[in-house]
Image 1 (tube, rainbow, N blue to C red):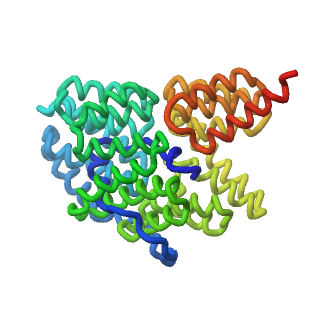
Image 2: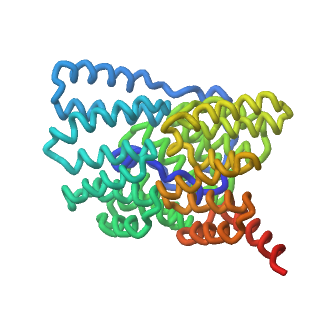
Image 3: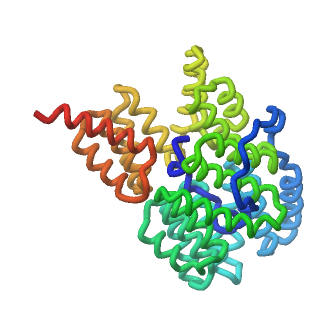
Length: 401
């Protein structure tokens, strides 16, 4: 984890963001992490039970919009906990089959679909759905919040700014997005304050999953604000609230990785490594290589390639796949193809940075600098982006007579 600027913008949408916020007003003091057992797998039995219940009810009343809405929400909730892409597929099918054609609230239906598509990294389609939600009901805060989410994730920053200004000042959706916007621009003090205010409002909800989400968001901001020790306290707290919560485990794993604690990093990554987050396979490969186990590292890399090169998988794994190919001279052409397609799908600063690095690795320094300029055109650059640009500029200086 290179800093709060580099955290994922991909979120399950406005409804789940607001359900993901339970409160903390200030950072918790640093303290020792609990024993490993505290990071046990999340208990999804209640959510799975609710899913089975609503599936049964809907089977007997297949056009019931209320039942379909409850079931869609629970599919996405379980996806947050265990990251099974089949739940997202089920949610999308239900939204298209029942919610969109039958719901009286068309704006809500389009917002739900946009959130689902965003979870699948279908950025263009998600943004179109969110725009349709706003067109259906321009007074709906959820529609504007979802439009902001899809616009930022897809690199449509002017539209994101407009969506942010369209939210009611001081409302919960506005404070959450304002915090994310400020964080992306490197204004961590203001970002932390806004997110804390939002979390304080949700603290009374008493929902573990929203609470854990909030803590990990604050942890990411705190990493850039006060460093890894303060961030670790928040990630640890998230795991106390929602045992096994993926965001908290990944946050602690990334911190262990950054400090070279390979055993702890591996132990944590293995808890959450699965096909839906195949980039973690690459991190496990790096850890095994650092521990001197090249055969195991190769196996993890093969697992990554198995998932990332499957038909239709590239939109989900374009960034790590392009960087992986770029590290190998014999696959630089593949890396360029992936990076170009990723920029076309998602012209966000992170995508331009990946393209810049691929161009650099190919020796195309002027094209690399042009892509880096695009990566630096919005927000505050992450340490990774700064490193890539420094390497490009240094190479250009050496080449100049």
